[in-house]
Image (cartoon, rainbow over all chains, first blue to last red; front, side):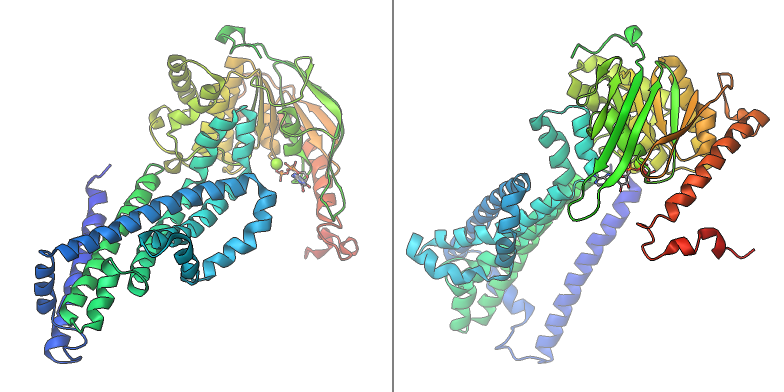
Length: 257
Length: 289
Ligand SMILES: Nc1ncnc2c1ncn2[C@@H]1O[C@H](COP(=O)(O)OP(=O)(O)OP(=O)(O)O)[C@@H](O)[C@H]1O
Ligand SMILES: [Mg+2]
């Protein structure tokens, strides 16, 4: 329900965020005109906006955008699926979980990009090597959160399910899964941010296409205004993606308040 | 298991303990004898309370009656048949909050009945009836997070009662509440008990509450938990909290209190709690007089 008491903090948040954006633009403009930094590093907001306007009419921009979005969405979806399924499985098979735990945890700390050469051999130079690597990147935090979420279920829920003589399917769907859901969603939110970071940075470093690749390409050709236009677009994509993930999480939390 | 019996046919069942013992084996540490040789009968339709110091095995004993835990030796029977696992005519209200935060109050109450396969219309009807009975009719649509601790506990009671159990096990259901509220809820519980004619086995650490509610109070000793006293409470029903503080009431309370105080002190000087020679410094000696 959104009564006046609930809309006020929301409006305040929106105004605050918009105000912050304005502030950044003002500082950016000021810094450029007062030459705190040279135009070679970062052109004025006006110049970047003009470059962005031009970009929006080019086919290169839209195909880069499509490449990146498709890669993000596929790797996020696949990583989430693998993570939730894997976390659930490790919870149900605690012995295997205990054996694998150190490996999974250390995967967290390894930049998976080091496996890129292997991917090249396995799937060749194409977008799938990025997607597969990024699926793993997304899956790890989702898996760990899912696993912890299930393990942290208060014993009283297990006892309740047993005392009511719940069948295994109902026990999982109606007790265990909803009990672990907040933690799983926290994992999905981390996964969402890693999906954006992973794809764009791997594009920057490795791929011949996508928004991240355009940034590096334009950087190498000293096209500062266009490069910054792409950077702005990547920020926007990340914002939209994270906002969607947070909205999903909030919707679930709200259902419990 | 037969179908959920119609309302009028719920018959209270007696609960019989036959030399029930329970030991917990924790690998690498010494075995904890939680319950030892508990024998006794809760007659059908009576209200028996168990009081005893913290950690003496009260929850363990209820868990065995509920079929959630198995006794190491001895056995419990309900209505003449031995308990081998959870059964739907034995309802347990847990010591911890067991409401489901993702369901509304009403759907918390219907949950048990959904599992038991009670038809939808009947579920709604019974759930509303039970919510009214525990005084939560106005909160049917609220999530547990919006209810107070005591309201959540009443919700759990409503969920258990809606299953029409013949035996109701309650593990410190009002444990987290202040004295006044728990007495009020206790009186409410007595009304429900007299309406539904259940057998109740009620765990509490409040002596007042036990005397107010029960037909009989059992006192459990500190580990290993044994029944060391049984006091028949001959106060007429219907009782209300006016009875608290009357002479008869105080006599019962004093008798129970003197037994329990001895046990609780024994519990606190247990070497497991105070490993380094606490016996030389009894609790009383530390009090400045
Ligand atoms: N799953 C378990 N594993 C090992 N020991 C246990 C387990 N459950 C209970 N115990 C031990 O058994 C004893 C009795 O526990 P129980 O929970 O029955 O006590 P209680 O009388 O309900 O206490 P309280 O009044 O604090 O709720 C305690 O000493 C506890 O340490
Ligand atoms: Mg207990």
